Length: 365
Ligand SMILES: *[C@@H]1O[C@H](CO)[C@@H](O)[C@H](O)[C@H]1NC(C)=O
Ligand SMILES: *[C@@H]1O[C@H](CO)[C@@H](O)[C@H](O)[C@H]1NC(C)=O
Ligand SMILES: *[C@@H]1O[C@H](CO)[C@@H](O)[C@H](O)[C@H]1NC(C)=O
Ligand SMILES: *[C@@H]1O[C@H](CO)[C@@H](O)[C@H](O)[C@H]1NC(C)=O
Image (cartoon, rainbow, N blue to C red; front, side):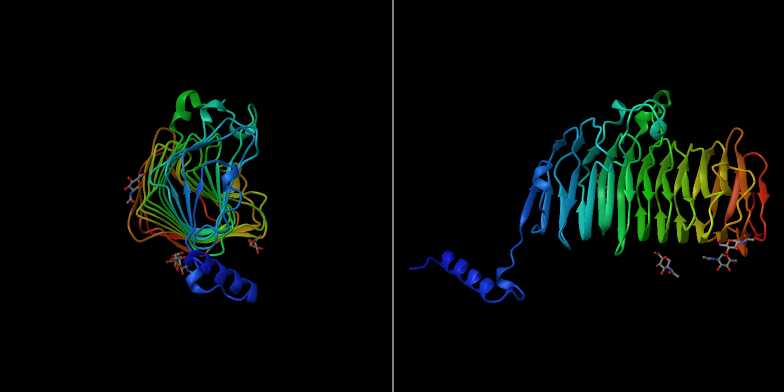
């Protein structure tokens, strides 16, 4: 005599054996999987719900979360990364259409155990980034504390992604300028990404949009670093259709910056709109748009092209401080009419503009 459970099992087994075709609906089960160690994340392919509990990733290890399409991922504790000489990323998300909720928990990088003022340029080996997201989904409500170098890197997307309510707090690295190259968000090769309602306290770019299209960076707070950057753009690189709106940038070297490598060819920055941003305490430039990178201002390259760089919509209010210039534009190959009607720069040293073929209308700077 079959018990009802074993009958069900028998039927399921029989169905599976009989037809590898679509699994009958009544067999679909929601599997909840707990990630409490590197090993327990080994195979998450059958998990519709993934729960990450508090644990420490040991030295030498990295944590891989390859989630099933549509999975829900929640945190129930902090994930800490022991000091390591493993290569970054120390944690990698490979996802399709997931919903990740950090519930306010943190990824703790222990950057203070590495920091020596040199960042990625030398000294103590520092793994970066701490977190890398490939694929797509919604990722919300988590913190990164003290990443050794770059905090969050966002890579190739197949769909749309939404990052919101994230705090990157590397402010401990301000002490004796020990923290360096601690970028908040780095966008590698992406499209259709929104980052909003987030805070970055660091010593390098708040966000760096290296290559991508259809990107929105809105309502974020950037403190202490190098401001909101498009770039650096290299050969074959581009940034297209980017909206930077309603952000607050406090005590950064640059407020709003576009940096294109002097050497870049077959590259462009096209259709960037700044709206409603507030910058205070920019110590080098309130706004810098340059094709001379790594230099701020120099002999710009001509192999990349900039067009459609607008300050429009809601007023952008910018204040540079100390020796900081209000606005710098260093174009070797810029074109079109740029609408700067929503730009007011209230303090800083005199702007310096080399526009090539671009024309600016409006604005007070
Ligand atoms: C943002 O995340 C924090 C926890 O880090 C949480 O308390 C807060 O409710 C979240 N805000 C929103 C709007 O979801
Ligand atoms: C520009 O990006 C926005 C936001 O991602 C998107 O809604 C819009 O369709 C894009 N525009 C074009 C012309 O692709
Ligand atoms: C400007 O850059 C574009 C895009 O890379 C390129 O096609 C064009 O030849 C460049 N113009 C000059 C004068 O170099
Ligand atoms: C930027 O401003 C110019 C001049 O007004 C306009 O032609 C262009 O469509 C604007 N670009 C965007 C992306 O709004």
